[in-house]
Length: 241
Image (cartoon, rainbow, N blue to C red):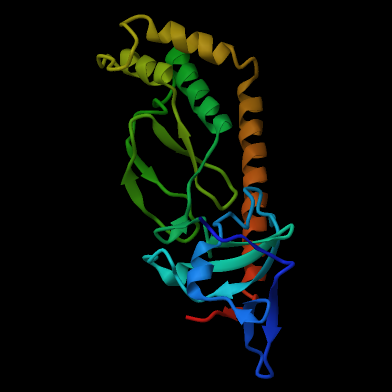
């Protein structure tokens, strides 16, 4: 059964050469005890802290693949001591910013497919499977799924929209490609009409909804990075073997 340490019994001791140790009473915490600390997220989804961080332990109990990419932080929640696996940058993926997905972006793509089908103007939003990333200073192309598209936003993050099954089926029907989804031929367009009309907002408002969602996400990522910048200043805690 995992050991539950409380701040009533656990203490931090600083030696004269500024080495901080984690102890229970007068006994230094061992690796075995550290492994039994309950794992709980220190950082909440919104980027704020769930408790008070004490320090970082340079020990990886779960045989982590990339030890340099994260910390193991001992932290306090109420009177309980916990540990947390904290990624140094949770939004970095393969050297680029992690893709942001949201319902507002999906609705906007569905509406664009709907408008293309009814007006016949321009290229279909789902025609080209090759996508260019909008990460500043980079130029990469990759194959996307048939129902995915990157949105052009000026926010420094990648925003991916996913079309609904009705939008994808209606597009294939309009392009005279036999639909592979759950819709019979002739029914997909009606299903997409009902879906988009159900939004009850204009195309301009759909774009505004995406902008709002992106603004919230950019702010959330900023808080996450500021929190991690503060965690990088935590002392290293020494525990006994």
